[in-house]
Length: 240
View 1: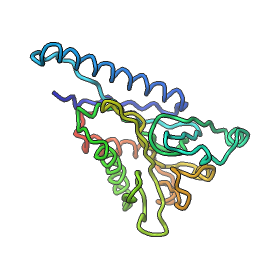
View 2: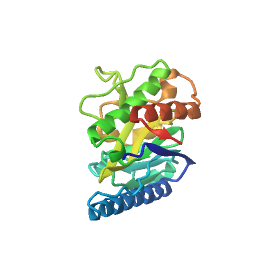
View 3: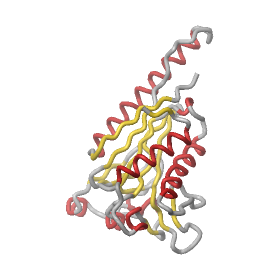
View 4: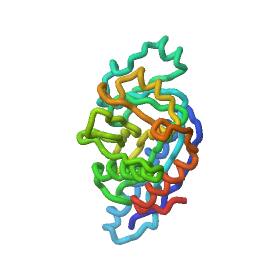
């Protein structure tokens, strides 16, 4: 049986390393439990329903200024040295998600789905496209027409012309079909911080935010509710 129930948590403004450690704990515990359930089932020749299920979590948060480098990223895509980071009051972490370098900061919705995809669908490509679709539908609520950029993850405006600009970056880790990390959706983000990196390894495209596209400050809590709704519907979640 599949567990469609998902525990929603909003961690607020939280230090990146603290959030990473909390993610890792949930991620590791889910994998441990999944392995335990599977081994028990196999030892009993699949004849007993244990009544035990792996949990799912959907976490929203914001981070103080931080740059993170994925496993496939290049350190030189960070354009600041140690003194530059101090001047910007920013931190830097090489981490274990996919993708290149990106920025997180206040005014940005960071979404960390820690899901056992065996409860939903075991297709990482579909998983990424579904997260993108949730952001696209959220932007449509504000009358904005966003889409995808062929060959890249994330959500973009005007991907087919010279005005291409990215509003949502993505990078995930998946082990035994359990996910962590996720997406970063620029709402009221200070976009000047993106000038200190080659965002996601792309040096010829712009980065944008919902505030910039609407030319006004946006209620970030309202956006969170809309995004959470679309994620839950698209995945068929029972969010609690």
